Picture 1 (spheres, rainbow, N blue to C red):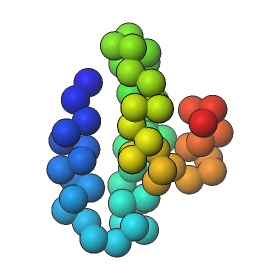
Picture 2: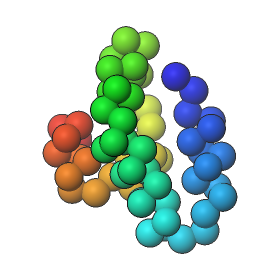
Picture 3: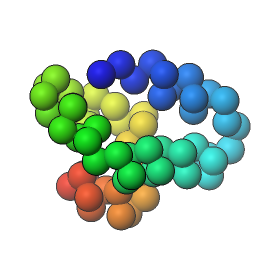
Length: 64
């Protein structure tokens, strides 16, 4: 999984609130992302600049 597209999407927004909304929608509605990450050996530690936008529900969902 390449997160460059997600980074590009985030760069389109200037406000942190907008970035949080996008990231939470992507990760909370697409739980298959976790499965793909597990299959490819990608840990959430490697994408902390994305997971920092997770709300409490997403953090709980992914046990972060």
